[in-house]
Image 1 (cartoon, protein in one colour):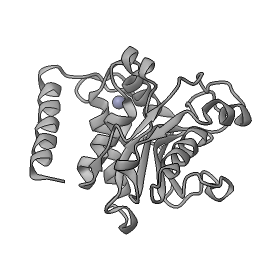
Image 2 (image 1 turned 120 degrees about the horizontal axis):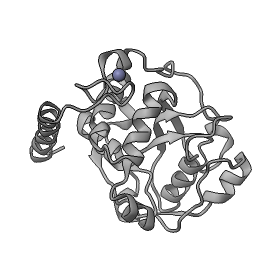
Image 3 (image 1 turned 135 degrees about the horizontal axis):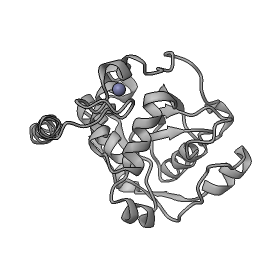
Image 4 (image 1 turned 180 degrees about the vertical axis):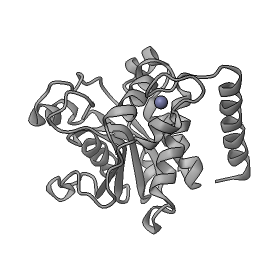
Length: 236
Ligand SMILES: [Zn+2]
């Protein structure tokens, strides 16, 4: 990371801290005024134990090489991600990226030269929402880990229906072939693919296939939160 982007990153974090002083936010978990996520709610976050196998990455040829989720998609994490995604509370991406990078610790050796690529939204969804929550989280993580963020290296070619309520097979069919990667950016690079939530991993695997189709190196998936498979939340 260049000195310039590090400077922009600390300026952005400084401005968010200042905004918290001037307009105290309500906690995303419990509503208490004063912090984007209060100490009690931070303490109650449900972290996924390190090394727990969440997806069978061996079972999907050409998909993800490895996968980690930081949190279970419940409690304050679920509320915070919902608020980031649907209520334009974009400052929560900084809060969550800070907590997750701290929890996961230094970048493992195989990711030290990785490109950080967020799971993209379709152009229609992006213009409706005005931002891609996965890209905000990916940017926050990339800054903290000193990695390069490449938010446009992967694009979503077509809209997919919401994954909510679909079976595992339907989720796979729904996202198949929806993504396209930019060869010039990703060729021979290892990729850290970031999404806000993961359910079956169908979306992440399809992104990995699109990246590898144009010659990327290994693709490591990272979801901020993992939804229980039987749950109704998450987009796959
Ligand atoms: Zn709280």
